[in-house]
Image 1 (spheres, rainbow, N blue to C red):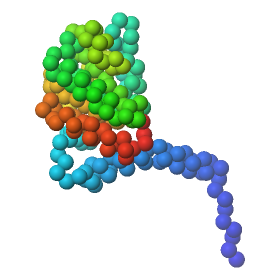
Image 2: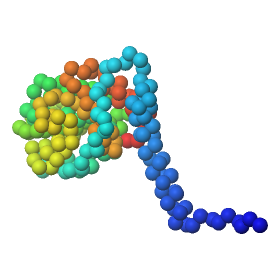
Image 3: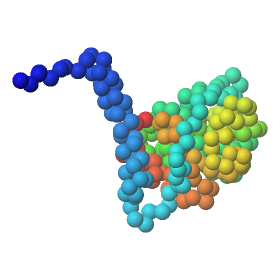
Image 4: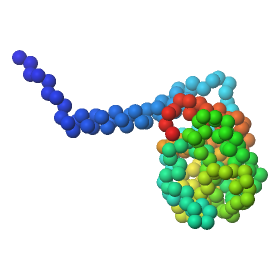
Length: 204
């Protein structure tokens, strides 16, 4: 005679529910990343994209000084898609070009604007306040000319030269550094990548 199946212990059921919740949270972002990059479902001939950072690098959570008594919170690069530029606070022509591209790219996202933020990591000479206030309202700023900033900078590709390369970086809502855009990358590439990632992922 078969014995009746035993019911799962309450602890087992609780763990199973936690695993299901974790899976539901991470699955959309993982699926978006796999579909877009791992399975190469990008349209053929569409080469004007950023350079994928493989594997993605999880950025450390460090609080950075900004200007005056302001701070960039340790979790500032979590919760939203982040476009990040690293450079001198005097903001030369490449810096202004990159910050403007980031601003215009975000504005072009329409209803998805709240899901994306812009971050300027300043390596020194902070900052051209008049220009930033006039042209880039809402830009998050953090100074990396300090020990905490160096800890963050060390996780970027070519860390020793990162502040002089003029790149724009893309960070996902979980704090993973995943793409970089060189100064000569087609400007529409950043917008096209972001649109596809936002469409595929409901995280952030």
